[in-house]
Length: 255
Image (cartoon, rainbow, N blue to C red; front, side, top):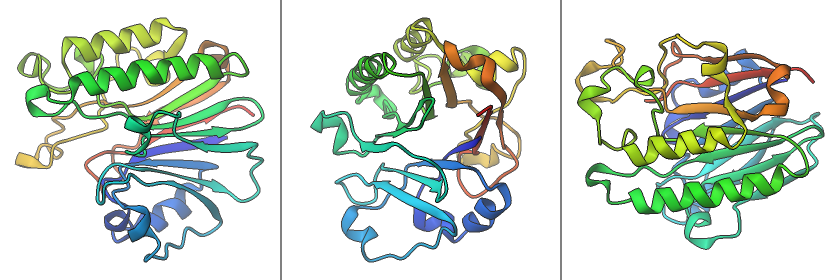
């Protein structure tokens, strides 16, 4: 099974930048997207053609902000689909989707950004902790694949300029400590597990042409329950794919 995750920074923008061609070329079984930036009302005014894929939308209430979307092949055996975790303060931003398959749950997540001045750091840490509680409940039934934009670079190897970014959004001690805590709860960062020393990034600022210079951050992840790690064939970053300030990430897992 091939799963791709991508923070697209706007569904309407990415569709104009060859998104459907990317979908046809890669043909993932499931493609989960973050930051779709379209409200339910605006979505109803649009028509998107995603070829042979079913659509499962979770727009934020606020127009032009956040939101997630899952596309999956029509012949795929999906047991259930769920938006949110039952907490309005997080669910109204469209940040969590749960896709239940036979052997695991796939969680599509768009973690909050703690913002410049760290104004949303408390909100983000609360979101993180509530999500972890939710995952541990699900895990009692079957293993989990958590993917999406986690908005944190965990270790110095995960960003180009760690010293310059100490304490900045996405690289605060609090966010990194939470990521450590999360992984200690029997989850594995698949890219780092398979590539212990590899330097590869998934996000670059739009400013100062930094993507061309590869001054980036790795903030998009596929993390799995330990039970699944032996089934992982590949975990990588498609850093040559353009269209967003993020690159897509890919996971291949044995059925």
